[in-house]
Amino acid sequence: MDIATIIGVVGGVVAVVMSVITSGGSMMGILDTPSAIFVLGGSYMAMFIAYPMQTVIGIWPIMGRAFKIPDFGEKVLVQNMVNLSEKSRREGILALEEGLEDLDDDFLKTGLRLVVDGTDSTVIRNILENELSQIEARHLEWINVIVMWAGLGPGYGMMGTVIGLIGMLRNLEDKSSLGPNMAVALVTTLYGSLLANWIFTPIATKLASHNAREVLTKEMIIEGVLSILAGDNPRILAVKLLTYLDPKSRKAIEADVLKD
Image (cartoon, rainbow, N blue to C red; front, side, top):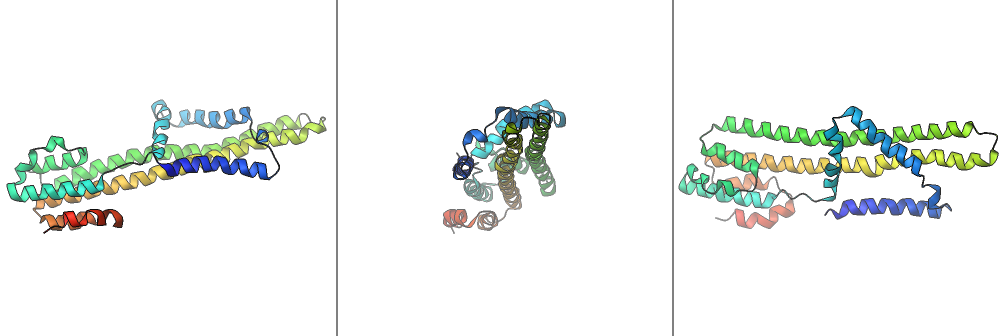
């Protein structure tokens, strides 16, 4: 569970509540069910016009990933590839086939299978980079869907405000209702802005960060697979792969993978 995301969501609620209370207002003044239905429901329905049904329905579990910390196992991958490099130099490339199916990372498994099959390094790089490009394209497509929703939120908020103002102007003879009706009309603008700036845009940004980490991890795998194919010294391979890790992760495994 990503505590940072939870803090952001809960903290956002607290910030809104505190701002309302400290300004002398009440929560009932910014709670309006019709406005919420129009902004959230209306913008969500617009998504069905822009995207296929399976995409719009499937966006919920995708956004849920912002509440989880992905584990791409970078440190374990470096250690595994160094061990595989040592085995390859000691027993030959074909020895890598043993235990290949036990590997957890499908991307690494694909690369090593190509190595065992005697595929040229250029072909291996092209295949793995193409697969990586397709993975990233799928991720970015989902992220763009969320960004689209973030853009629709404020627009529907403004439309809701206009609808409220139209109703208010039709009833100008009741002067006592002008203030309350204006407040309710403006609530939809608030809801649209909150959806965009508090929920959807931050979630899209976090998912983009997850995507960048996964892409970097797979680039590291490509480098490792090609290094194994080239028969590089395991220590050289380790030095190459350690450059992909952050300083803290690098320091944690450096002594193990750079052993003489």
